[in-house]
Every structure is written in C-alpha cells, then in structure tokens.
Length: 104
Image (cartoon, rainbow, N blue to C red):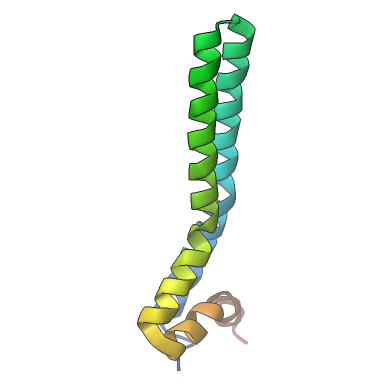
C-alpha cells in the first residue's frame, strides 16, 4: 500500500491540488482572453478581424477543454502505469495529507 507518512503522499497531495487549480484557472483565462479578442474585433467592425478572432476563440476553447480534461487523463494514465497500488495511493493522496498534517 501507499505509505501514509511518507514524502510521496505529501508530494502527490500537492500535485493534485496544483492540477485542480490549473484545471479551473487555465480554461477560464483562455476563454476570457478569447472573448476579449472577439469583443475588440466586433467593436472594430472589421470582418477580417472578426473571422480571425473567432478562429482564435475556437482554438482557445479547444485548448481549454483539453486542459480541463488533463486531470482525468493524468489519473487514468497513472492508474494504468502504476497499477492498483498507485491508483489507490493517488485516490487517497488528499485524505492522507490531511491526516498526516493534523497528526491523526
């Protein structure tokens, strides 16, 4: 089983927290910038700029979806590579970090 008092579990907990933050923040930022670019192009009224901004927004939306799914992809791949023990360790990382930090 995964060591509950080791450094590995602390690192995994930290990685899970960072991935969770990135999973939400990056798509929001990408879509926000894409929307701002499209808004600027619409305000300018140039058809060519609107078409380019729409294309950029679409690319950013696809990138946002890919980043959002990154967490699930990492979990799936590490589960395949690491086996059942690794999947259990990854799944319990946050729980074990909280337990080890509180002394329970």
